[in-house]
Image 1 (cartoon, one colour):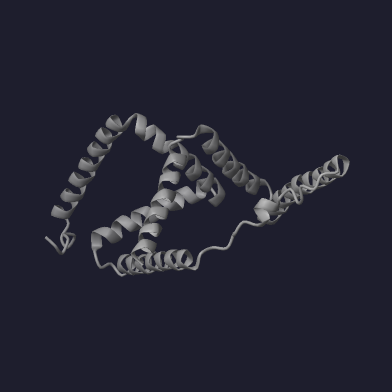
Image 2: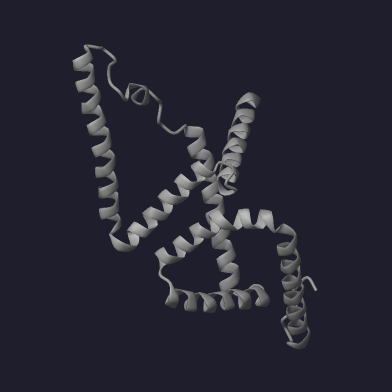
Length: 206
């Protein structure tokens, strides 16, 4: 049991390490392929429907695999060799998801969902006036964002940010931390002044 837990922790750590290496462009070729494929997919969805994009991707993959299968078959017939199916090593691999992994991440997703529902209830029912006002401000900003960008455009911008912000922050961490600290101090000062002047806006802890 301890060995299984250790193996699971090690596997999770390995996945996190791979994701970090991917986002920080440790292997430029691998990250470029992943980023380019994801960006191409999202750009395709802006032009075609998701059904069309999935169909075209499926047709492209099938064209490659069928042509390769026929080519290897002809080559084996000419050379009179018996190499077998060209994709045999992939067909023999286990592709089923482990049940413990599925249960683990399902439980994590359920916990996150419950936490989100509780947080939304707290915000909409104004348990804390300051937090609810901040949330209302965020919703107001998002109305302008929604009028400027659609969902796919936002996803494209998020994808570009995910693959660019970590490496930019790594190279300019000192300067970015300095300006972020200045902005946080300014925000705290403004919130403190508002809480001091407006009755009923101080937190319960105070």
